[in-house]
Image (spheres, rainbow, N blue to C red):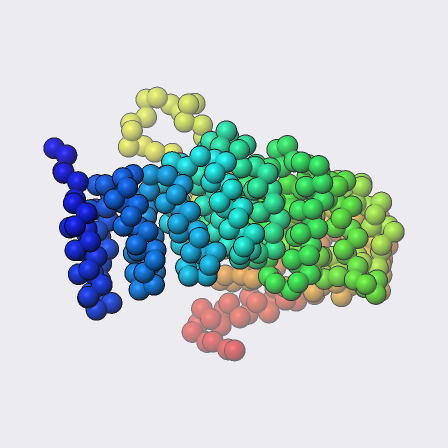
Length: 423
């Protein structure tokens, strides 16, 4: 049974009661239900207009009642006008991303409103991108209708500053990856420049798998010439010295198992040609880049389609989950990444020992450090077979140092097991 629409007078009375309450006692829930029953009518529009005109009510009631009564872009524009005037914070527009409200809007009108908002207040760009991402979610046609605007949004510094693992960061990554399927002319270079500019601004970019790293990997894997042409010029500062922020941008992987290093997407042969002309930068790379990939000993997870159908439903095949701490298993093997070997071989004798040692001995761990050290010693043992004499000698020196460190850690483990803790 449908409820009769609430009469205007009843809603106005509820608003008056609301206004007379202490702030802690106020709730818009009842009025949301009332105004939703007359959504799309002149009465609803008049009520929302009156709330928008009331400085005491607009901050509390306009957005919740507008989202409850939204029927056209007019109900959204009313809120946006107050955001542009500084009467409401930009974040309120994100309320229109809930419950597919924005799907009621014509794409061109919606885009026009959002463009005007961002032009008036660039700080609104992050939340606008988030709102748009829900508008075109899983709808290629809608995305195509606003694509040109999304292209401009993802390059804005105000948006880049918010790719911090939040939903805005997720929206940014998804939008960029969609654009990169068929990037407009100049977009790849512009995006690489934007990421480099932001890294140079000393504002931390989240190097995790929901932020910059997967996008940078995409750029270097699919568009290596265009993206590297930008990034290689940024690896030196104005005085010609190493620019650590760009080295860090390229070398930070964002994954515990080192499988997501953006720089590794370059072909080692192509990188070697550039590296040979920039050997003075190799120590900086070597100190900060992951050195190896991990060959896992985990058995392959059986395909359910190939399982013995005679097994009872309760006899599930055990699945071994990857340890998020990245503690190595006995059968795991660390293997030099080919691009890292390029850096090692070009680093130069004077810097090699310090750069390689600082990297190989610096790592986070949980529990005993012995398994980690043993894997690194095995890694360095492989390097002792190098045909480069200096590299072979330095690798052996580090192997010997790792052996001593393993012995110290084994002693510490024994003390801790006996209840003796030293700091």
